[in-house]
Length: 253
Image (spheres, rainbow, N blue to C red):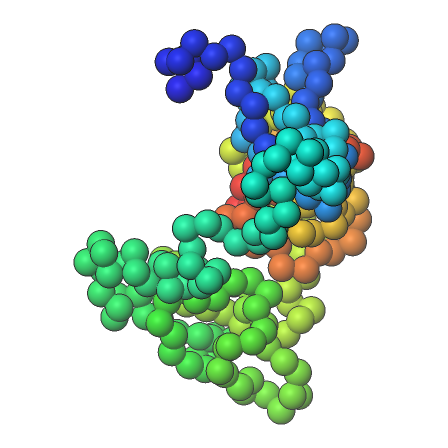
């Protein structure tokens, strides 16, 4: 689109920064100065050609500073409340959004129903679709364990192919490793030897110390955490940092 209108650069309001490293010959993406608003977790797919033409004018500012500047310029939204949800999902009800999509596509409710099972395979309940569940979820399961230990149950895994939701205890949510696929190496070239990093597995996840290990495929990398992490979820992004420098990002297998 930029090419179509003769624009050399694209400016976006994301809280992130981009610099050019003369020594490496690469554009580097860094977290925004306001770490509470940093959005680099969502931007890991940007490649060198895109970063070369991207401007992040808010990256060096905090949100309060942006509001002051916007007010001084007479911008009507200077005091608008922050949005925490996806704009096209009313009231943040993601499951209802997917239900509506299925109905629009002619996908019957019965075809997405399945079973809730424990880690031993015991069937505990039925459900109306795996999109109603997320790894780590505790509330709204409406199931009771087959054992008498009275420990709460959490979603351990979801499988859209089998329509099964697996529940278990909290310690079964912990994982010490993951494989990220379709990795985009942003600020550095693909690694050829182990490298320490901090890895985020959710947007609000505190980056966890880990070591990155190369694989035969540079688009896949193994992450070994220093301490096991809770609710490592296939299909979510794993974004890798060195302090504020965004090294790479990929999708958890």
